[in-house]
Length: 298
Length: 326
Image (cartoon, rainbow over all chains, first blue to last red; front, side, top):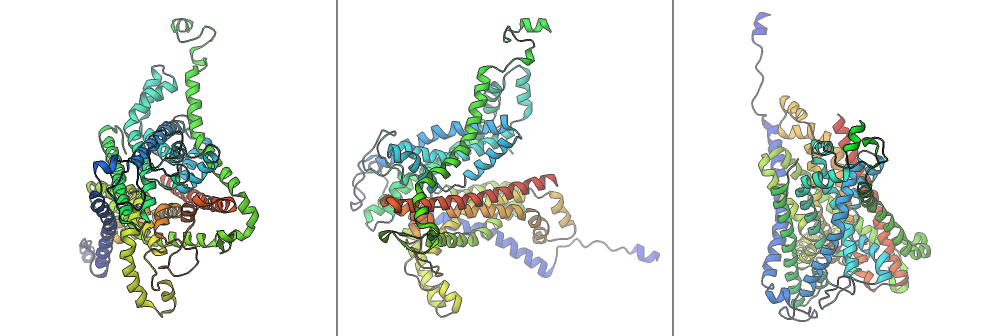
């Protein structure tokens, strides 16, 4: 008996052998492969857009006007009406959706807390991020365009509806990270709730809120479907965003994509490169803002 | 007490106690404005349902249950939407079959395989897929990707002709624009959201569970199947459902690459149509019942995506709550 206890076997700490080890290796390789699989289409699409777009893009392409008919070669006219349309409509949508979204998040985190209404609003705003963009277009068409006609404003409403839940969600996540001690410190100095929120909580979370808003803008700038039935298409620049039909870069890409004419396709690629550049710049600025100004993070 | 009230200039003359005073007007206004902004979400969702249904009412009343038949012929005033519902289902399923294993694989790699400092750059790269606008995917899809895929389809098609089931699924293609192409592009587009949600869920697996599995001598893969996946499967199902919702609603890329032909066929390499794409392509020249029919397809799409999103968010939230409690 004594001999047996003395010979207590050491645990086997070596790596698993045979099929178990092979299976582990196979699955690890598969996981890494899944990432590589994603890189291929991403690299493919970016390479094509840059290769085909770079030869089309020039100063006159970006600032020339009007947009020529589809049969014209690529060096006639320019995309200025679409560039200015995209800027106007996205800016107007941002001005509408970002403040409302931040205020909605303030309600959810500062006022609602755990009550049922805040729970419902938070849940439904998450659900609203899943509403298809084409449905937003149909919605604005039936509630606005049928009564007041096509305009950049209608397009901005549709984009704003898409941005609102994204801004609410990202701002809410940032407000939640602000430590309660900051709020309590401000209350102890006698501030009202509005003042605490506006001067202490929001400045503490501003980095993350701005970054989330920029990502929402990047998403909205690339949307085509909500604009199809809200702004129509024009070929000359429309500087009045509140009335009259307008156009945008995504709409122009969509209009040119299915055309057999090389000029139209070139214009499509040039507009695509411009649009991708705008979206990537917005995203990079958002990352920089997050890195530089986010005081509290997970 | 009374001395304090007297020296505090912020207290109105009539109030009895500094802590019982009414909140100042600005404070109440701010609270109401914030509440209003929150309620705006609910208002918009209700308005979407009401206004689009109103516009679609004539379709629903004129066709009744015939909206679910397969006869789409605007010239003859026939508006059965079954082919589009079928196309939406098929393309979403193709997208999920391709995107889910890849997304869960990336999520597992990020949380369990690569060192922490690498995970952020990898997340940024995967998120780039979501930054590329839908219409750019469509442009690339129809001008570059579909013609390229068509060669592959042709090879597969000629290889499988004559085989019973596979032959009818993967027969010879007509052009690159097809259900399959649309599904593949949708897979690219929904990979980022499925990845990021799965990663969030997998990151909540307690370290003690994983260490327990390792302590029992498990390899990494055995640890994943034994500790990580059972713990996070509910959340992953939610993430997949959200991906499904995205795939169903994605419009412009699909409108460009699906081939625009309202047919119901098992042939995946044949051109087809789906709900979002038919609205995008035909709404411009539609009027009367035609427009109401397209609006009605939008209502159906809205209802489907709302149901799926409510389910998905419910699962994700319930899962998160259960795991936090555990």
